[in-house]
Image 1 (cartoon, rainbow over the protein chains, first blue to last red):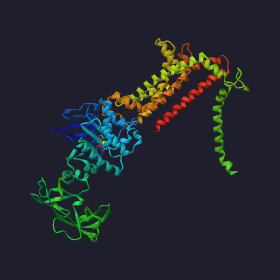
Image 2: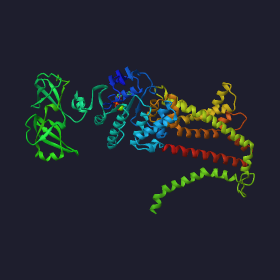
Image 3: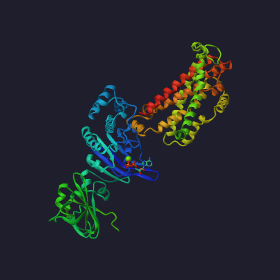
Length: 361
Length: 264
Ligand SMILES: Nc1ncnc2c1ncn2[C@@H]1O[C@H](COP(=O)(O)OP(=O)(O)OP(=O)(O)O)[C@@H](O)[C@H]1O
Ligand SMILES: [Mg+2]
């Protein structure tokens, strides 16, 4: 199927500063796609180029099979939900939502029907005549969303729309947003620097770093099989074990990490003896016990810090050579560990191996 | 005792404050009081009170005509100044405009040039371009004088406007013109309303420019000036009182409206 959105070698520079560096991306219809990355990595710029508010320095942007690179914002069928909502302060909620419909030339009856239908979708029927200033943050958020959805865009663009909400409301809105996306079947292109938000809602996550795509995939793949140190660090909590290859044959590589021998599946890599690798070990993949595990990788350690987090307790465990491993246990299991000296074990297949890009030194 | 000493600066300040208020209000009060005096010369004691002078003013054709003329000039120059001022303010905040400081400085110049100088230069200007003195010239003069106030008020409001509002309008299908009339202009509304009232008051009040640029038809200040030269009479007091009350009411109302809009 033809992608709804396609970036072909898109670049954007401001003077000497490169904001977006050779972006290639296709987005399938009906998907919830998230651009994820740290501040300043070019997420908003990419989104604004698709919205028509910035013109690429070079490259091409396709929307539903048409080249829109130089088409002004009012002539392309995408709508944005802005971070600060940008609701028109002098118009009622209903008027705000109707704005795009009026400009499309719909007749009053049709506008009225569509507005009521959308207000109902977010349970704001009773607020139609209020002004934006008379709504709560979450309600404004919903209105902004409905206003952007009203003209039935090919793609809905959302630039960190939840960042102004408090934590609780944000989680609630994440679920609601995903539900609305599924219900309407619209293509959503969502921008955030919050990895948890990205994991919760997305079908596809595009991790960006310094204007480039670092990795792209579904949340499971990105979390379970990060392709670079940057992605491993950015998504979720992680232990990165920098190791030296002892030997490698097929699915099993023997590695030296801090004087301890561990094994891992090198995946597609063919590591040579003496080469450096990173092993990505997620905290929840580690099993803590008082007795030595009978199989898998294991290492003895001393608990240095425990942080109670409600549904789990996070442990910082010092293992040989001063290295620290971050792990977590169920609160009720903490007592069974006995003292501070414990064993940590993990199955080799729960880890991922990443090549060390700076292997020379 | 100690209390009185330590309170002294405060007491003095309060005394000055009241003296100032008195100084401000006394002439106005006197003027108003005299307008009710039942005799045809302005002096104490007032003796009998009457509303006859007001009745006379309201039937004075000259006064009514001058009122209408002043209002017409005020309306025209306000409309022109608001349009021009808003346009200049939009220009100053627009992207990719060079020399916005210069545009701003030029637009503000008429507010700081002394009225006399501005009046003379305008007079020289219109005779250079062969424009007759009279209504058009007065409107021109008042417009130039009022533009800076509109620019400053519109700019202040524009600068507080979230940039995204216009982007959102464009995003939803509005071209530049529609976005301006449906989003920017309503947002500017309260500021422009305040600015317009201010323009009206400036124009009604203006004497110097009108004097230099006017023809034979007198505006309100010119009529009152002419009458004063013919000798003080309570009729003039009544006229001035009417003007005072109406302009003060308009000014206060405008202040009330803009304040309410600002707190929203
Ligand atoms: N109008 C501009 N002029 C100059 N530089 C800009 C402009 N807009 C963005 N940039 C630069 O381009 C880079 C990418 O900006 P962008 O807004 O896309 O980042 P972002 O990923 O959205 O970050 P954030 O999470 O902070 O919103 C930044 O380094 C920024 O400083
Ligand atoms: Mg951004």
